[in-house]
Length: 113
Image (cartoon, rainbow, N blue to C red):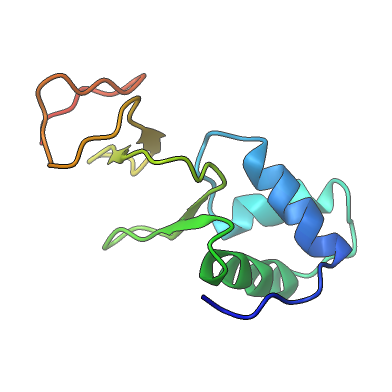
């Protein structure tokens, strides 16, 4: 875990916006959300702060081969599902120690593997 850095207004807004959604947005989507409150924030600032927040364990960075990184502000233990067609990411309502498909429920998804 990295040494804590001073909290900036940009970092607080990014964290607030990310924790306020369940959609697992990309950095570009978080940038658009952040600009609602901070119109002069740069895309580079958003990327740097997302990286820092992920390294500090404040948010999760979801990386899937062939898809853009997505971010999750929900740090309670849970799994994710990804649509094999569009790449949309969702939360699984329970946490299991071992991978499984039976008994797994995720709103808007049919779990196949």
